[in-house]
Length: 65
Image (cartoon, rainbow, N blue to C red; front, top):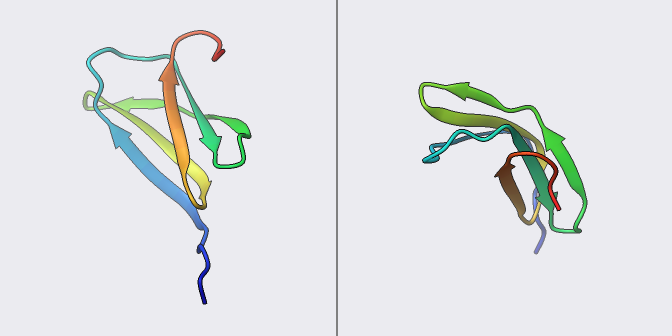
């Protein structure tokens, strides 16, 4: 069957040149959800509750426009 299997509890570690205060997931349907952001060993660490076709994770300071 041609289908997308949704993954749950997906960890993500990203090294960025500057620390950010917030992380927001933007799903393929355009919905947004704030993620709990941690900093470990110079990396930004988040956990996506679910991942379908695709999601974009935006690391930012302040409000996301």
